[in-house]
Length: 206
Image (tube, rainbow, N blue to C red; front, top):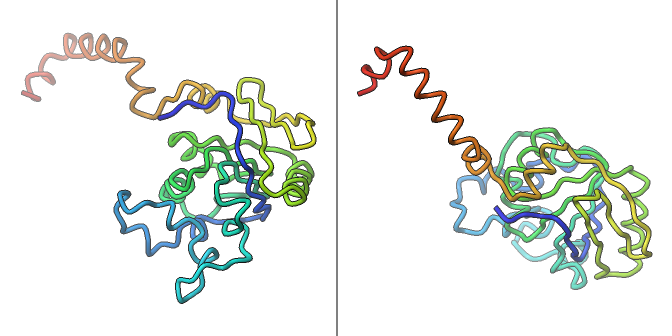
């Protein structure tokens, strides 16, 4: 998993509240293999019409935001089901940071496990950032994870909140497996002690 410390990217001003996981990736796409590119399915029913034609007025389809890597969202982002595919779609599209006024707990954890920074800002700050980015389409934001700040296009720095454990994992680029392997020597020592104290269990596993 690629680490995040400082990150600069074009911001996409979605700015909506209660964007649920079924909107982020409609359930019919979850049967697809990851090799199909889950970024193609992100907000599919909003980016495209029923004839699979692009909706030109939708923010993701506007030229200035097509290469956006930071998403601005409202309250309760990622609510709904616990499907991890929603984060796969966000990450595969190329978005590395979601700045929102609040997240579903499960969605936020899934982001951290997959290298996407879920940063919480006050709703009024998100609204200000969206306003600035809409006024200057293609404007970039600067995210400083160690100092927990985002710099707006007007140069103002805004502090954001994030779970301390999630922050450390994202800065180190550690997924679940890598985080566990950090404690491999302790795990091995525990297993050795456990099986020495209960040799019949070790015998039963051979």
